[in-house]
Length: 451
Image 1: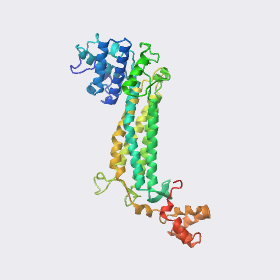
Image 2: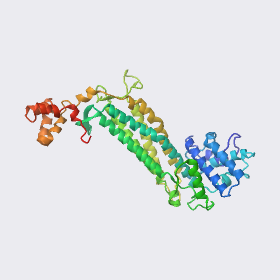
Image 3: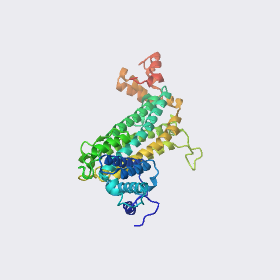
Image 4: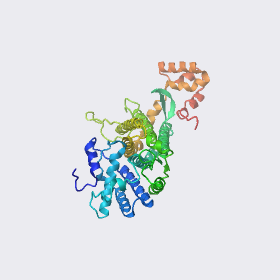
């Protein structure tokens, strides 16, 4: 096959491009750079073990360094859907490193008899152990970049909770009126939910520090120096500044992708919470005249092409769609995880892509959602209070005194007559006016029992 003069990839990459013209989407730079870091560590380890001469090894290291800076990001044309186990991308990287290393040494690209993608760049390695290792490194970096974004969202909800701390409003269960709460408590709960998701994702990230590097093809370490695994681990720990650990069982590490499943599951859990919260915000801001209308979401754009002045909760709607897609990606990860067979799960490329894509979408959109939605939310205090006054559910606070059935009778009478429970309770001699003023004070009604 003829290859373009400007390309650094080789024949195996060219065949992969022909074989897998699926989406046109390429591996994300964070993954390319992580994989190059693995190759650099392997070259340094092989030089230390005198498996690779310093001339070739140093050129490989320099080429890997250049790739890690992003200089060669356009040299990785292999589609994200490719040969199982990521062999196509591993060879794409091996060929780019080999050709660049040949240039560094004064040779022409393609002179693989002098410096080979397989014999030198891939020395002591397999796609089966290096691809998942690079996957772990890339996802760890993406999670670390996402964590402050997620915690900032949580903080924004906490700040809104403080702002709304003394605004009583109707509680709702089953979408029906319930006993009053504070709007601030509602928003504080959102902050807790997001913080819990951030903690869960951080916990699952820790499992990715266990990597299968050194297992080569099936977990035996075949074709690598007996000390390669130990040496390359030490070097990769140094280069990545991560507390990487050996796989507890090198065979399980190639067979199972459970660590990726757990990270993806944490993202799914986050997506479900984001959907729930976005739907709450849409409901609370609905109307505003014919809906709940207790809060107002920022107006960021016109909401209709036909109805002048209409404003829609577009930021929350977009968040829903992003979260739906995260759940779809997690479903693909789950299917890929169970598709492992015998000594290897070959579906790591699609798992890696889906997790990195989810993290990229959330990292991009959540800061926008925070600034253009959460921080601009305002409360309609009068609308909140109006939902409490005269609400028959206030009979609940009399139940400890008069019993459930009598309280229910008061609620029904209030519903039928339109008279407030407070007024009926005073009239029937259940409580005095002074007691009623204290008991039915809107600020007391919504007090948090455990505060």
